[in-house]
Figure 1 (tube, rainbow, N blue to C red):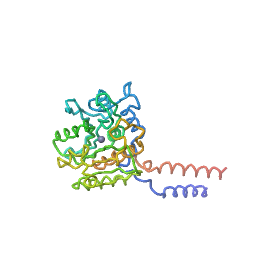
Figure 2: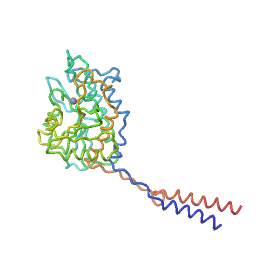
Figure 3: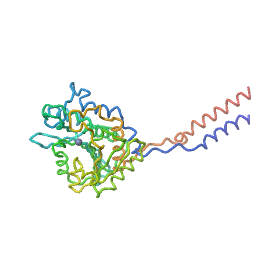
Figure 4: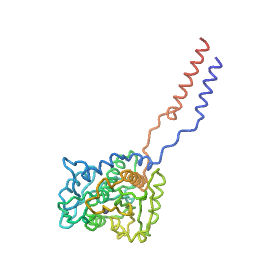
Length: 341
Ligand SMILES: [Zn+2]
């Protein structure tokens, strides 16, 4: 009898003294792990005509092409966004804005933005009304990140201290018209705007982040988030003066209004840039997936994501000790029974 009990107890004590279970990941890491590659691919296929959208493929997302109305409707539904209407080149356009509310309304919001319109103006004979402009890299890639961010950040069971604004800009190719309108309409500054354009072409695993000297720290913070995750891509902060005075995307209106913004994109641009050959086969979906993980994690970090409150089960069960005790007792009984039998 004594042998049986001592075996059981020794075994039990041995297990109980093992290293404690690892703690939960930070919210940013948990959220990045929820970014779903298949959904990123799906969005890319729908936006570039590789998959039918409501029964037929999208040929172009140019603001003058009829297909853009279907793209707007789909994006609005997929992101849970509101429309912000404006006019560009005598055409009705709309930015699509998803707001994920923070718990502290006095704090400035975090923004992730990407333009969803496209052009193939470098293809000879291009007609914005009728020609194809798949814009897979530029900038279905950035929009695929936005849609996934809306899914993942919008589904977070915890909280964010700052609100997160996910903005799909229109009429970028007409001279940043959508982002200029957006910034004009802002009633308060943003905490940080991360603009993705384009993020689908990947020479050498680098995601370049052009910053204005006033906000170099913001680029370093993005680099730190990349180090927090296990990613193939490398974040390369680069001063926009070194980068050729980069003001050619939707971050520029924020800079002009003295608001912090970063322009994340791959460089050099692919040969198909602004042509009808900017199709999905030139896009590295794994890279887009990683940019989505990075963007989601960074928004979570900047917004001060907090984990959901989990109601702890009382006593031993919460630590996993109860099953251990149960097994120990069971083993002891087996040994005892054998010895007595
Ligand atoms: Zn672009």
